[in-house]
Structure formats: C-alpha cells, structure tokens
Length: 352
Image (cartoon, rainbow, N blue to C red; front, top):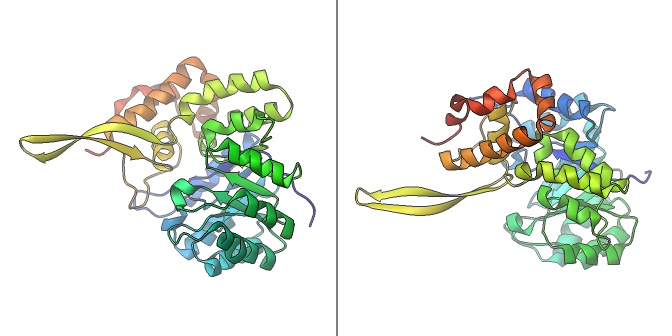
C-alpha cells in the first residue's frame, strides 16, 4: 500500500433527492462531473453532509458505487463508513473497498459515547487492522457526536495502524490540532472539517493543515480547491484573497436566526433557530438551480429569515466576486443573477 497524501479540497457531497425523496441519481452524477471539471482533489459520498443517517444500506452502497463509477480517474473517492456500531462500520468499510474506494472516513461513535481509549481500541483500530488495504480517516466532531478521540490516542492509532495517516478535524480547537502535529510529526495530514477555519488551520505553522473536507465546495469547488493549493504553494496573500471572497458562503454552512413562535393568540415567543448542515447548503444549491432537492426527515426546511441569510450571502458573492459563481451558470445552464433576484425560487424553500 503506497503512501497517499490527503491534501487540497475534498467535497463532502450532498445526496440530491427528488421531491419524493428518492435518490436523484442523474443529479448526483451531474454534481460529481461538476466537481471533477473544476479540479477538486477528491469527493466524499455518504458523509453526514450526504445525509448518511437517513440512507438505507442499499442506498448507501448505491451512492458510493455511483461516485466511484463517475469519478474514475478524475478525482479520488473517500467514502463515509462510520457508525456507532463497530460491526456496521467494518461492514461498510469492507464493502466500500470492494466498490473501489481507497479511503474511508469514520466519525467518532455518536450517542453511545465511548472514551477516547475505547474509540481507539474498539473502533478505529478494529476497522483499520481488519481493513488494511484501505485508508481509515478518523473524523473528530464532538459537537455532533458527544465524544472525542484525543490527540494522544490518535497518535498511538497512527503508530499502530499505517493506514491511518490523516484526520478530519472539526473541533475548532487549534491547540488540539497543534498537539496532534507535535505528537505525530510531519508525515500525517490534518484536514479541516470547518470551511471557515480552513485558511487559518493551513497557515498556522504549529498545525500545518493540508486541506479541507468542505461543504461549500459543493457549490464552488474550483475556488475552494484554488485557495488550498495557493496555501500549499506558499502563496498566502493570494489564498487570503480567495478566502475573503468565499467568507460569506463559509458563514452559512450553519445558520442561526431569530424566529417567532405562536403559543396562543395572545402570546408570541422569540426563538433562535439553528439550521445545520446540510440544510443550508441544500437551500443554497436549490436556490441557484443545482440538483439538491429536499432533505430527509427529521431535517425539513428553513424559515424565511434563514433562507434570506443564505440568499443574501450568495448575492454578496455575486456582487463582489461573480467569477466564483459563474461556473454554475455554465454547467447547469442557469442565470445566477435572475435566480438571486427572483423570490419564487427562494420562497418555496422556506416553511410557510
């Protein structure tokens, strides 16, 4: 097994659905072709951005198989195979390997909350040692899982299992990432799991991040890829310019907004709603005319206020840096300016 470098931008693909909430296979293929044509380093089907918790097993493998088939040699494919069951993660990783995938992303076990020691011994080491011909990449995201693989156990894991040579970091904790780099050394890749922190993680000399597994690159793969490559080439000023242009989009991966609830005729309540990935990015893609479709329950829609936050971010990018969104026009044969101006495209994306 040759040593692989995990760098650049990898897109955590959304899974597009039809209005009946079946997988939109043709839309999915078009989206992957869009990614490849704009130079993305790799794609990640059936991650949590791809709504893996709501996909049936057969759908899970169908999406992976489609991604491998379309990607061919155009870009690398990393499959989401994590679970809160080690046996299920093993099965998914084995089948992903059989489908032609060369790397697998496994999140820390959600809800049942194993310790860092248990995560290493009973989960990651089991999968990595029993699937030695596929790279196993831990995905550390305590805000979603309620548990966390510590840097010390990650270092031991990478030492014990040569096919563990990268991590997706979504802790937002640069001190932790610096500790990971200190313990593991240079020959290990730290990928950002937060679009808005990617530039910071990559330029921090204590962390030396190598890239990102991105949500927003579903919409702007070329720009996110270019930003990471500029940093890796030592062109920080140029990379910063791209980062600043993309910042409005980075800020809507999660959307927070105040909304009103009616308790009774006489009582109105103000509530802050937090709409989390992949709902905002699917809202953006639908508004711009890209295949995305609805989310599967329990994810639903955003409020009008939430949709407007997403729409206004796209308007700002279109006004200041239209070249970033122009590739969408060419690929999907849409008029971005018209779609951003027309309320009809956006009103249907919000709860009534």
